Image (cartoon, rainbow, N blue to C red; front, side):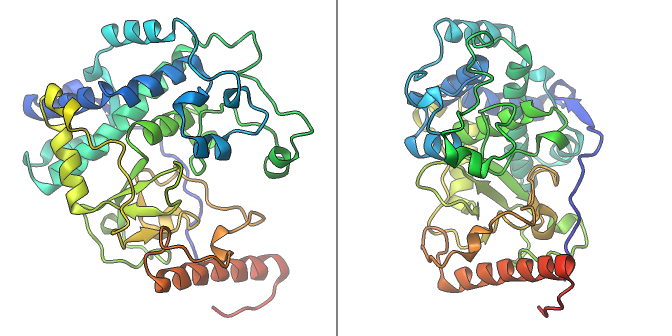
Length: 356
């Protein structure tokens, strides 16, 4: 079956939060404030201002996967530089969240939804993620890193770090603040700063939150065949000891998160469910290796780079783990999709006629 071509980012159409009617605006601003007052938000935004990961603030597994062995964040740069938290506080005092520009379509749908409805709650979750992302982008745009002269921003692993160069033959990305699947910066509206935005979401919220989009178009969706849920919210986490697959949040998880977002700030600090985690009980899961348009599960269709033809497909490993695949049938179906991908590549590259 044919798959969708890579999606290009459309011209961004955005609206400011302040254009919402009062109730919708107040609920969204309260939710943003509740997240921004968490310790995770403070630590993460501080690293964005610093420009370089601080090893002590990241879980070890993520540092291992994201940073080369030779990166100073693993040994020397363990905390943000002195003065960074003071700069962050100065930014916070002058920052007006109501001025944030967020996706127009999400804003329009949120505004049209009745408060408390499933549509309202789903778009609230989406807009909060977009807002956290955009705050990180604005911090990155300030370009106030103290590491412009000491080489950390432009750090490149030595040739002896063969593991890095084996998997990154083109050298480092423009920033070390990135997560595995969200590095499509040449096609992002804000370039490398959007990579930083996804990185911030991963550490503050627990992952990048994605949404059911299959009901918005006619398909086909060869990469995902679960029942369509117009209010489905999915988490794609790039953190230690968590599955790499995209997992649907349980209704109980969504309720707990929504209660936190809409709580008074003092109550939110006490009852924060963050970071969100993929649940072992979540049976609806999506292969990140599949193009976003083939699954219909994404926030923006251009956010995630599909695997290039020469890249290894992790689904072909003969390893079954219940943290990734709750059922053995899930594992088999995932491998089958990977084999179909291999056959397609063989047909296109070598002209060999493999049947699906």
